[in-house]
Length: 521
Ligand code: ADP
Ligand code: XUL
Image (cartoon, rainbow, N blue to C red; front, side, top):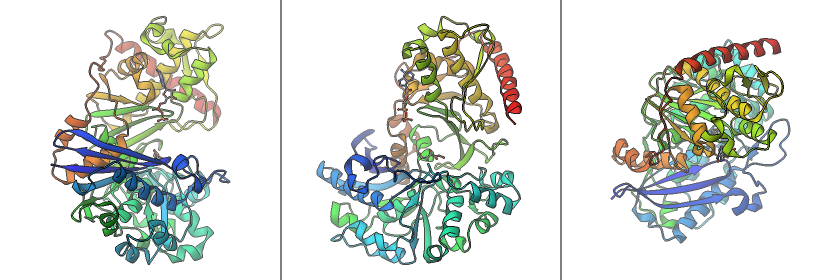
C-alpha cells in the first residue's frame, strides 16, 4: 500500500492531502488558515498588514507554528501517520527565509519536547520574510539588470526579466539595508525548501521549479548563475542551498515528527517545489501537449515545455517542471476582474456569459473590440488601467460588451502564449469561471482546441503528493488516471466554420493593441 502526504504552504494557509495510491483515493485533507487559526500572529490574510513602499512580508514562524498545528490536527483526525511512506510539498513561490550558520545543526537536533517555533526563532537573521506580493525592489531589479548587461540578459539567463517579487532582488535589498544581518546569514531558503528542511531535519536543496523564480538560476545549465549571483549580493553563492534534482529524496523525516506525531522513521522527505510547478503536476499536465488555463481572480496559463525558451517580450516566466524539462507561467492580471467589471457595468448575472447570452451576438462581434485592461496589466505590460473600445457606433450594449471582453481576453492569451512553441492537443480549464459553458466555449473557439474542465481543488498540494508517490515508484500515468481526470461530459470542441473569423479577429486585435501601446509611449 502506498500512502503519501502532500503539503501546500500557501499565502493564506497550509494544507495537507493524504493519498492512498493503490486505491486511487484521497484519504484525508486538512487545512490551517493563518488568519482564523493563528490570530495571535496578526496576519489575517497571511502577511503583515500595512507594509510601506510596496513591502509585503510574512512571519516565517507563523508558517512553522501552522505546520505543527496541521500535524496535530491530522493526528487528532485519527490519520495513521505511521503508514505515510513519503512526503513532498509545495510553497508559495519567491518568498525567502534568512537563517544563521547554526540553523543546520539545530535542524539535526530538534527536540520533540520543545516547540518548533522556540527552537527555530533564534536562528532567524531576518525576522520577517518578503513574499510574492512584495513590489518594493524596483531599484534592485534595475541594479541587477545593469550589472549583467540589461534586463533581456537577465531573462535570457534566468527565464524571467528582473522582477520585484523574485527572490534575487529581495535578497539584494536586504543585503543593502542591513549588511550586518546579511553578514550573519548562513543560508537563504525559499518557503518550499525551508519547510522541507524542517520536515527532513536537515537543510534541503532547492528544486529548479522554484529555483527559477529567483532570477538567480541559469535555465540552460540548471546551476546558479555566477554573474547573476555576484550582481545580487556579496557572498551570496555560499549562502544559497544547492540546486536539487526534482523528485530527489532529501532524507528521512526528522525525529521530531516521529516522536510527536507518530510518523515512521523510514518516511522519506522528497524535495519540495513551488506552487505553480506543483499545480502543473496536480492538473495532470506535466507532460507536454496540455495547456492549463486557470480562470481565477487573475487568469494564468501554464504548460510543460520540453526546451527552455524565454518570452521575447519579457512578460512570461519559465520555471523547472518537477517531472523534468521546463514549464511556462503567464499571468493575465485582469481575469475575472475584467469579466466582473463588464457584468457590474450592465447589472448582469453570469448567465449573460453562458451560451444563451452569447447567442445574441455573432462570433467576431462584427468588429467590436475591447482592450480589457481595467487595471494595470502584466501581459502585456500596461501601467495604467482603463479599458479601451473600438468598433461601436453609438452606445455600447450589454451583449456585445460581454462578447467583447471574452473574445479580447482569450485572443490576448493566444497572442501571448505563442512564444512557448507548444501546440496543445487539449486545453485544461480550471478556476471559478471555468464552469461557465459560454466562457469555456469561447476558449475552445479562439484557440481552436478542445477544452476539458478539471475540478481538482488544491492542485498544488495534490501535485506535491503525486511527486511523493512518484518517488516511491508509482507511475505518473497511474496517478494522473486516478487523481486528474476531466469531469464527466465537460469537454467542449471548437465550433465549426469560425476559424477564419478568429484568425482575422486576432490580427485586428493585435493592431488595436499595438496602436494603444505606441500611443501611450
Ligand atoms: P481565486 O482562486 O483566484 O480566488 P477562483 O478560481 O475561486 O479564484 O475564481 C473566483 C472567480 O470566479 C470569481 O471572482 C468570479 O468572478 C468567477 N466566477 C464564479 N462563478 C462564475 C461563473 N458562473 N461564470 C463566470 N465567472 C465566475
Ligand atoms: C508566481 C507567483 C504566485 C505565487 C503564489 O510567479 O508569484 O503564483 O507562487 O501563489
